[in-house]
Structure formats: structure tokens, C-alpha cells
Length: 67
Image (cartoon, rainbow, N blue to C red; front, side, top):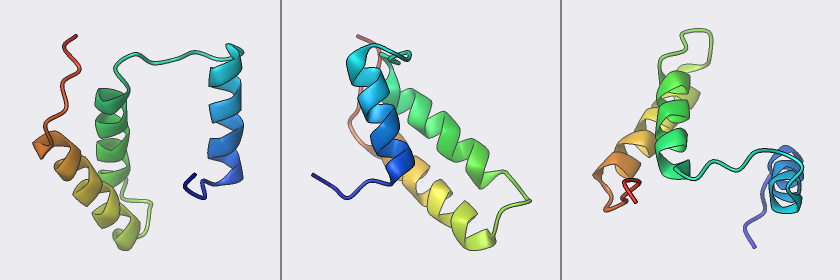
């Protein structure tokens, strides 16, 4: 398993157990969140650039959240 942060691991456990909401269109959710990070001028430029790069790659991937 990828070495996720403790915060991410905690949410994986909460979602898996049903204690918090599951988002069925998770890739679209991730793209929107990454785009918000990319547009947040209070964050370091390197963080914003990384978020924009990740969002762009997800948009151009062959994901489909229409199902």
C-alpha cells in the first residue's frame, strides 16, 4: 500500500467503516479539490503547481464519472 499520510489513512478507515460519507464520483471530487488548491494564492507556488499538474493529468486521463 502507498504510504499515505495519517490524515488520509484515518479517512480511508472512516469511509470504509461507513462512519463518514463515500463520494461515488471520487475522481471528479479530486479534480475539483486539486483545482481549488491550485487557485489558492495563500499556498506556496510549488504546492499550487503540483496540484494543477495532478488535476490536469486526471482531466486528460480516461476516467469516466458518468456511470
